[in-house]
Amino acid sequence: MEWITAPWPWYVAGPMIALIMFVLLAFGKEFGFSANLRTMCAAVGGGKYASFFKFNWKGQIWNLVFAVGAILGGYIAHTYLMPSEKISLNPKTVAELETYGLSAAGEQYIPPELFGWDYLATWQGFVMMVVGGFLIGFGTRYAGGCTSGHAISGLSNLQWPSLLAVIGFFIGGLLMTYLGLPFLLPGQ
Image (tube, rainbow, N blue to C red; front, side):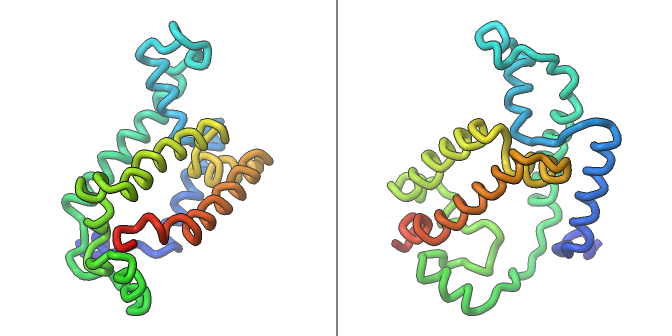
């Protein structure tokens, strides 16, 4: 049982993702997690109000099943398979994270200082969670898909727009990490 609770190395997860992509390509499918929001809106009748939701959503049921499986898998992993030992972080990283107000760095996978109601009630938490969530939603729609859809599915299909989107995601991530995040963490 220990093998399933321990973090899996890249040489297990990477080939599994590649295998899934080969299977999807063989069946003519394209993976994209954010596309499920459009499918759900179409399934509940969104096509009556916007032409964007008028499409054969039943052909995307397999993607909805994947999304439900990912959510259930995440719940099961968090509830029953979470390792009890500390996270192996470099002491320098732990010390730096503590300067940003993350006192439990290395103790748990989800920092309670970032994922709690107290932090959400601060201006930093509001910007990080609400404004950040809106920007992610807008960026996903503007780019025609999310990071998983473009980086995993789009690049494996050699799609030029996906390469541009992934480059944009990386630039945005670097800008946020080095210019925005230091001002939004609880200790600032």
